[in-house]
Length: 361
Picture 1 (cartoon, rainbow, N blue to C red):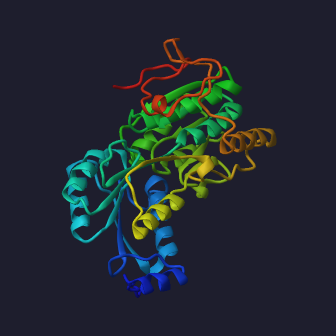
Picture 2: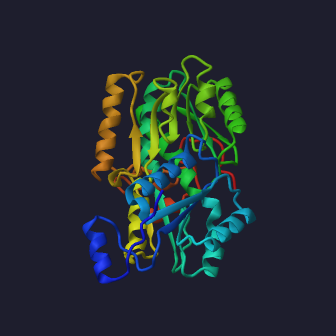
Picture 3: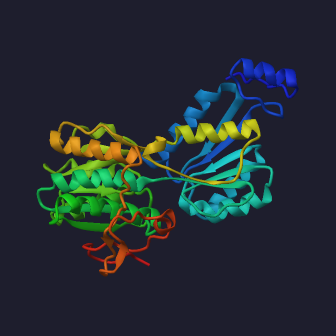
């Protein structure tokens, strides 16, 4: 692709504006880097972040150059990759996994002129922003569908790591399944990985052997859906991306992480010189959490109920964590009508009443 050189003069900025292009103070395109915990072909989390990268390329054209590194382990390797990306001239780097948090802070301190954005973390600096999506909103919807569609009253959840983001999702799904089916039990299997198709498939198989007929996941691969497809009557949901190849069943709906608007907005801020360190937590109302097509396998009345919940959450009329809600030990988490604060959600480290087992330490 031939790249334009944007002029720094007032005339050049005016010309760029007239062409609908962002103006930059320096010559050449802005180099934007993305660091991924899994392969871009995982069909889930990393795939969806890479769709955001491609959206940036399409939106800005020659004004940006994007680079990425996939399958970067959380740890020392991540710090090395971030450093190399900064040294290669990247002016904005997105680090897209929770386990990159400390490494992002460390590298950012060495490159104060480079902007960093860390997904799902909470540590910030002058040149480090954080961003997340309210995945628990989507979990509420699929939890409702799960509670209404299970025949065995056993639903399963393949969990990655016991961090608040994942615990929020488990609790939201269970809470909303129980609201429509008080007999629901949830089986949680912790796999301690974001992406490992073999482990994810083994977890799904173990759940099915225990009588689970609805499987949810907070892991990245399509392996649980592939495993569900082997047993008639078992359904699941796309995770992070649509996973449409498994429609109409076992994938009966999906939670789609739509990072495109956020990535475009933040790249534009760097180009405009208006970028600031901040925390952003978007949800359905921001278009960041999307429920993919609910297929014909889902009964019409259940589909209508799910759509009603989507509409209410999107409009800000319903919050999935609205009391009365108790913790697993029976103590009050939220009183009747009380809505969870963001501070309560980002520190969540417990299961809700009715869940079995313990949250790993």
